[in-house]
Length: 137
Image (tube, rainbow, N blue to C red):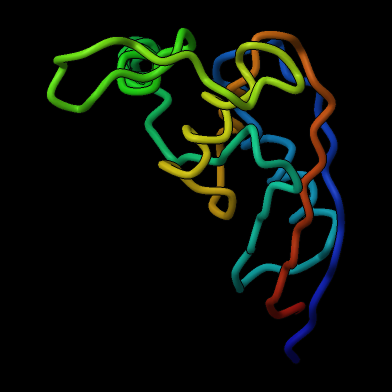
């Protein structure tokens, strides 16, 4: 019989970087009693995102973070051509990392699985909604 479970996960990030939430997700799935199905995980924040990646070599996450920092630098933006003056971000209501975090989220995903990619410099409490759909034996 097909069942569904709705639940929330809340974590505190360490600041900018990755937090592996695989074990926490697996725990919620196990607690639901569902064995075969799917999980939809959505971030309730616009300045962190979800990503799937390997966990065998931590250098992957280091390189990924360096790439996104280079693509969306915290200091502001310059023309794509590389020519011209850098313009500071206008939206900085929550600090200088506010706008870069929003752009990085737009380039990644807010609904996927596995890692929380924190784009803010300081630690934050983050909540995620889970919709589990599957079968119980």
